[in-house]
Length: 341
Length: 211
Image (tube, rainbow over all chains, first blue to last red; front, top):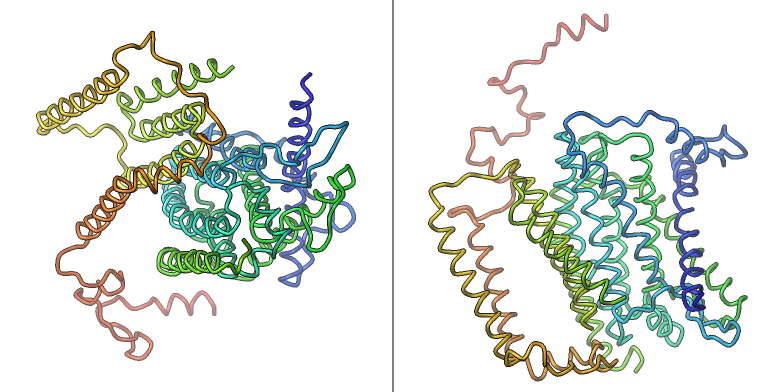
């Protein structure tokens, strides 16, 4: 077999293993975190500290009856949960997770595809994630689900603009769309979160809206829409939406870590270009994703939900202008030569 | 391999494009449009324009078609709307569209001198040609005027849409201000006591239940 192909498959398998394990771990972290914040125990019966709770949940999902409501739009109803997983497991190929390593005389960059349009392609594919929500809500033959879908489509478009512009600002001083170049730039200079505080803030807020997390989980707001777009889904299909949400959070966390927090690298430390460097790089990236996920949980159980008009106003009248201001500032700073060559 | 991918996605683009036109459910037609745009993006990548492909997905599939879906679901269009009165308008538009399309087709063949079989091999795709820098250079030097005109056109469209969306006479877009003209009292219910026009709360029943 072609050694390049083997390298790509191994790299994809590594990233896949990281992303597929996010959901079970996060189920436990989320519920224990909620307990911690709200001063109650959380799940603590299955295994030490309730650690086997995700396993119990998975078994429950598998043995539950798979109910399909009547009068649903069958093809779209079945396709939607599968599509929920698509963006995260496609975009992970663009995330660099270590230095270039040399194996048997070959130089292998530790990213599955080092695409020329890296960051842009990431945003393009993750923007397709909304179709899963829209299809699910439309196909479910349920008013609440349809309302959830309508909200999702308007919300995701509103926040995608600010997100994209905050990402563009990062790419100006780097002078490239490649995410490996972004990491290399941050190794040579500063982490982008320091000169681009505004952009980092916009990215953070927009990431919450893009992943439908509280305080922006309007598409599934359980107090008004029951569960929004996935009201009519049960058993394993619901679990797929669940997995999709956490995988998308992990993917956006990885993008944020790569763009603003140095990606797989740490300041002042240069990893060796061998297996040790690969492992250390991957661990660094996973640690940064884990910190971002902890922030997701922390915010979810701290803030109340926004009202829908507040959400729209925040997106269009606050975040979008702020991201454009950030873009102009970064462009000016780059021209003035403050952000490196 | 590339030929295989080309035929696969060309067929997908054509098939889903036909579905967009003929499917009776607007939602399915719109979702087919996404598939068409995605296949077109793959074809762009095969042609050595990955940037255009990524933009195609980001802008069209990721944003504009989502807006289409938003409007369709908001209006709850379940089936094809029959509009017999506007058949003639549709016919005129279709003929005009066909003329423009045939004109583009003719232009493409005319440019190549109708030498389809004997056409010279296209220039080899080099890193320089495919790269973003080459595209940006061409866009902001040779094609600057068309680029600026397109920008102006989009600006006009945005302003036009804003003007068209504003209801005449309404200065504010805040929904709570719409109640001013209605018959709802604008007083604080906690200070002014119960509203005489509303039925009073069934207090005896409440007391009964808790005694």
